Image (cartoon, rainbow, N blue to C red; front, side, top):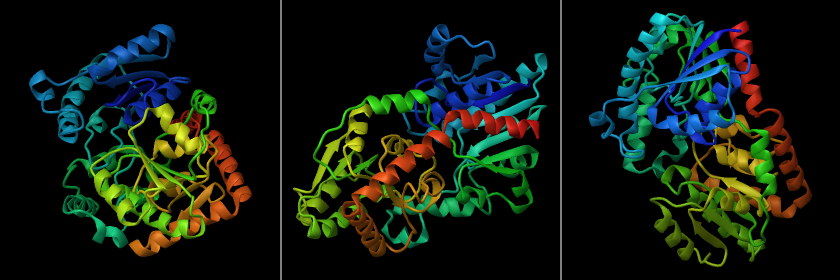
Length: 403
């Protein structure tokens, strides 16, 4: 049994995204190791409540936050990357004092899992593990002509970071000091300098639990939709590809329905597109729904559509697979890693018009071959429960530290 110090900016029980990543990796590692987690103070209440009901002798938490004046810089998700960068400096100084009184075998920096945001935990006197790292997932060049100016700037900065990490000047040092770099996707692996590739292990950051599967199974099914898209309605999600594909689908299936769950800056323009294409009877917008209602829409469809051009370990994919739905997605970034060819239809990224046609073809395949589509959904369920279970993260980490 080793002593593991985990830096997890995001870490909360019963949450998705970064907080869920930090929490579940810590929980799994603590099954066989003594674990100390350093996280933000605003996570303390939910963690204390969990440990009151489910005490864990191998798991302890330390809390650090920046002074209130700096904390006010961050409002929700605004300026969160700047705040995180400053937090890392203070968190390292805090951790350094902890290490003066306690020896640890391993330091694991788990969230934020973005290689273009810094961690200074590699400076601590212990073996350093960093990841699961994303940040290399970008929009394919074929689709750059469809990006807004702001989105294009982000993609250009990402491309520059691969050669000169301007947003994380400590990147090369962290790679050099690491015993192991855990990488989410092949896109991110390609950002690691060749001389450090031998340190890399591949593992997506998110996972599912038995409780997740049971919760999805309990949710009911309603009729009325053939396809579901769920997520933020922003440009990088390319929901318009799914809408334009529906225009081709309804030629053969006039009553086919696409349900779009979510809201965002593109919602109004997408509704205008639906009207312009005369698809008001075929495309339904629900707005933002509760997680349970969103899963209900997914469970009610024949296939889940993921038109996003880049993702890490997108939780909604796991929800669709737990719901036994075949996936239609772009064959890139997190979708490439998570979706097996037996569990869905992955479309190689090409130019915009070709993507519209290929998504339409895949949607028609699902409607024309319902038994094969159903089997894809079953295959996806087996994949997510056997390969992407949270317990696999603990086994994976044990293998790393014992090699």
